[in-house]
Image 1 (cartoon, rainbow, N blue to C red):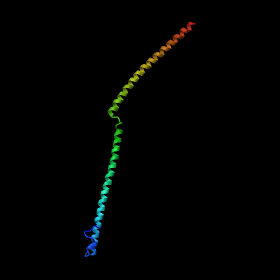
Image 2 (cartoon, rainbow, N blue to C red):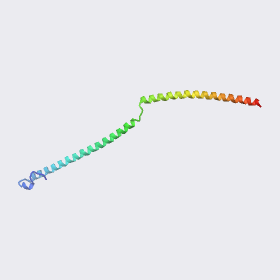
Image 3 (cartoon, rainbow, N blue to C red):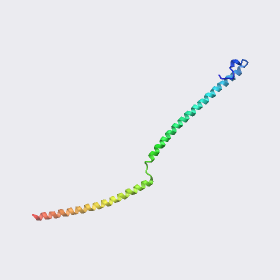
Image 4 (tube, one colour):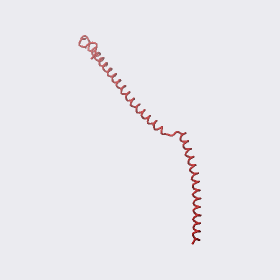
Length: 123
């Protein structure tokens, strides 16, 4: 125990004074342990906060990475307009091709009819 002087060198102390000195030493030890434990607790709390901050930073980085895959409203509307224009062009082209196919079908029918007539009278 860390008293000012060992208790056996102070023979004229009463038992109460010795008890108070012992209690004082005990309180000093408890206080020192308390401060050590508080320091350890602060260190552990700092490590835990650092770990949580790393987790949050990682989650934030993942969220930013995912967010970069999203389309903005402006880009979406621009691309949608382009798709509509191309679809309109395809519909016009389809109408033209359908008309040409109908014309070719009609010509094929006329040629077939003409050949049928020619072959019928050729005999």
